[in-house]
Length: 541
Image 1 (cartoon, one colour):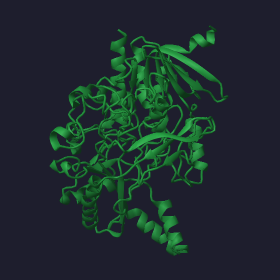
Image 2: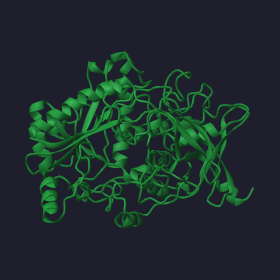
Image 3: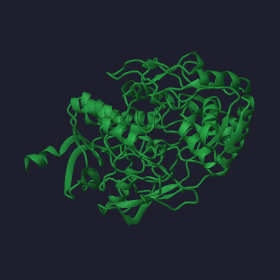
């Protein structure tokens, strides 16, 4: 065996160099285990990404600054659908994600919510969906680890300290303060019992981890230009300093099992179409909840005819996200939104109650996007020009409000990902997505639409525009395709994040989540990846 071949082996092989993989690698390396990490895409340079965004024509496309490599394509829908995801369901699933070192947290909003305890007990409390096989109390230590790794600011009096998610230690940083406009909306919505709180953010409110405090650039999506907002490449770099062997441009297409049906190796194809084999003792899949499914389903053999970890046909099922509806309007006073984080606060007191047995829970983000470009394009199309156009943009941009709801999606085994007969340029199968919205979500929309209208009236709103019932945008929170459970007939992995079918195969990230709640799923996905790392450390002892 050559020296090069010997180097493609480690105690733990991680597939996926995003935040879930990076955080797990840091933990594993700190315990003395060797770690090799494979990433389909290449390294990403922050300065280059900022330059791409500055020069790009499509400012409303968060994927535009990110280079797409032929060996690691990603879905893109602006200016047109590039066909990477084959839509087969009655509802489109327009997920967009980055394949590169650091993953999709390069262009996320930075919201770092925990679940509340009731989110993990839907069957016991409300007679719907399923309970998690672990409790909130069991997950809480891993939440703390994730918040410290990512650098999360949060809490404070307006949030009641913990947002309804009990804590055993304070946040790493104090919460970012609400801006003037948010404070005014908070005061005016309060009469409706809609409580606006400054949300937990993986974004610095002070210097932390050698990163500066947020200075309010307001383009967190698609890229934070100063590094105040966390992204997964920061954890990967930290892991490299601890000895991580990172192999970029490595597209994993096969998981190899041995006679005992344990995982022996993974195979990848590089940018030159050369195939490599990587061996290890333990394997942790932390590619996103769609790409991991693709790898597992491609990995068929005599022992696993349906793919690795898929003896009961559960891989790829129970796909969830957070269907979103929106309301925009012009308030009756200047608010001057558009500086600071793009989603700094939310209406958070609509997340839980007995109603969850009948209709979706709701969380409403109060957005802080700078509306000038959007309004300019809108009013030019309507025929405004000259001074009249300038005056209207100035007046309305100062008063513009955007509210966006996130609805709870329940697990449905028919919402799923399967392999397509179509292949990409490197011969890797594309994915077919089967997706539909239940009446449970539509009933949540009906309640939310009423809340939107109340909010508009409470602030003297005009020019109100609402999303239609049944027409929802995707929130890019890919959840549930590898779900954790006690029964192998309805789940992919156990409470240790260990595959039911293979003792040395583990999963991290948002796909492990049995239910989706109403909050951004990244923090929970990282916490589950740290739980998986903990399971590997104990197995290796």
